[in-house]
Image 1 (cartoon, rainbow, N blue to C red):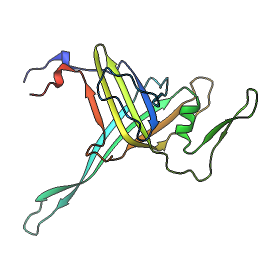
Image 2: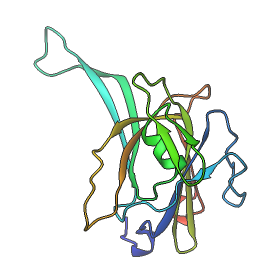
Image 3: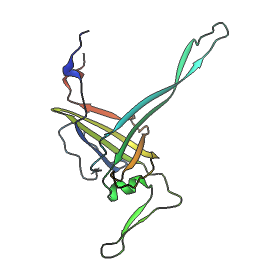
Image 4: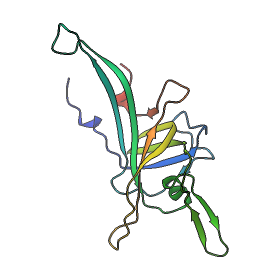
Length: 186
């Protein structure tokens, strides 16, 4: 198999979108994100980290020192990113069940509950490398990890979050679309 530098990709630009769970996502690369999908805006220059892992359990036998089989026991998929635009959509994603209200004039109030409820959302990720476009849709996801919020004079205030994907009614945990010619089915 030959090496082909034309198949090396980078994420030059992109966006993370959120929507209420059950919101229809684009099923192709040309359809715009429909009403209900909100672009979270600027992310830190670290971009988005996508992680996928599997867990297995060894089946051992009396007659063997090494496992005779491995059984798949779990799948985990996450997206991690830091939102650097502080706006209602990012702040209420970071603080589950939080509500934003206008207190009159230019005062806005974020109410952060002591006992938040689960906050499942649909999550969309889109990124570009020249003419190559990719979209990843997680029909059911939730922020399950949050980084500390640092306030300093030398860096943007960031809301670091990790979204965990949950299995949906379909057999997928996520759907990844791409127009990358190197992906053509053999």
